[in-house]
Image (cartoon, rainbow over all chains, first blue to last red; front, side):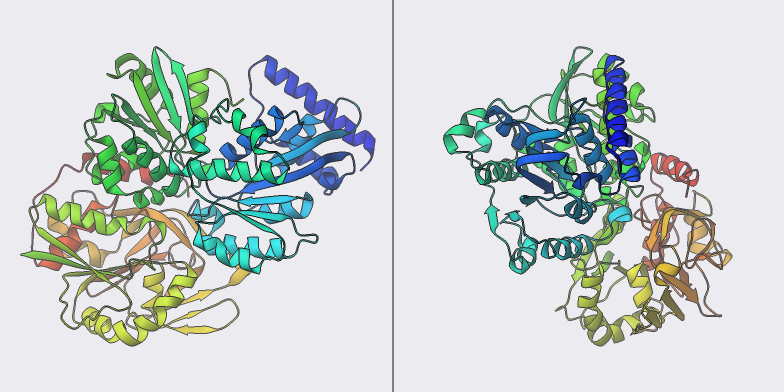
Length: 386
Length: 252
């Protein structure tokens, strides 16, 4: 591809980003990367993209967004420049888009680090396009079986692709996850394991054991990149939640705490978190969509422990919405949760309005899956992500 | 009276929330004041002293299915075959449905023998045919709808709704009755328009959802039928009925 075309894509993308920022449209789109890869399938291998100190790719079922955000935060606080796909667009075209938007209006992209979260299914393709110095594997559990297939299939694809890399990146894996043993053992490069100690977690605003693993993963990465304990520890407390991952949004006089719950594991992590906190007054709001990024099969809601659902909802007023609100309401009632028919809404906006106007508690805990989280944030903040 | 469910291979065959079927059966039986016991049948379980009212078995990832395959065929097979042939009630989903057939032919041509209790076979055509994934609506077959127990309980109509996700395509033998006819979806094989199998008191199906979650008429049929009851106290299923109706309008 000619530099001319590349420059054109960069400039048009920037122009559109400027327009969409001005009109509050959000920036989570992937078309610039899509177009760039269409014109030049090797776009990401271009010599005009330079990460002087290294690239880290973070994959796994849950925790990618929070982990890459924390890595970026710690590196930037230490004065490094970072390119990061913070919108969460984590397929090859999403990563390419985020890189394009980081290009200066003229010239090449020069950053110290590239920090990218990568969709589980897309990891092999991304690995073959971007030379990574480190690859983080967080965890692997059932998610969107209709799209990804079974967990074993992903694990096999990862192993095959990681073993084929020369030179091998450093593998940073959760050492408590036995299912990663076969990958680590087969892997020929260096491996760093992290665990779920809460030492670093307790210095952040984050909660929950699942976040302990995310924080330790991020710490392992910045250490690998040469940061010293004294360089990063003091910056842990200024880290803010990634969007939809624990953030609190004020809307209509209420505090909505948004906890992304997109598969059985992340759902149960969040229920554990609620059950571990000192019981306080709150309303619970579940939102379930079946759009393409969510997976169209919602059967997985029956993999969530009925007991945990029942306990977390005990003596709480529960609201339900999303395109599959009836499925969610039925699932909750089979778990023994009391649902009032007045509190279930096909329309998310109506649900938010009802909660804002008539919800009995100041605090609303929201457990949406992926696309319903994006829609909910848009309603609560009045704009799209970021 | 005790309702004893034999839940086969809960650890290995646990895909797609199908375990929810057992949760739903327990919930609906308990609501009627019926005493329920769920017996987990695993690789090491000795079945000799077990008497189940209902057997449930789901599907699993390939690796797990291989793990139970030998145990099922050699150890549990004769028991299950006898149980089904003598009219024992059962619900067999996806992988379990396939394993109870005569054989499973993989895309590479290799053949995996099944239990052969259902006269059907399954074939995977590899990349030649698309995987059957999507929402399903089907019309229960006449034979099923005319069952006396089903008729006395049914308040929801003659449709079943669910979600399918299978690579193998299943073909019924000439004398086998399908569970239903597909209105939306692929069903057994995307060719003959049938979904599932109805053999004596056993049901094989590709439907997930889990299948009993929005088909309470099927759940109650299994509870009443397996306990020999001709009626059950009715429950407030209005929410489920709404969910069933909404599911009929989902795009495939």
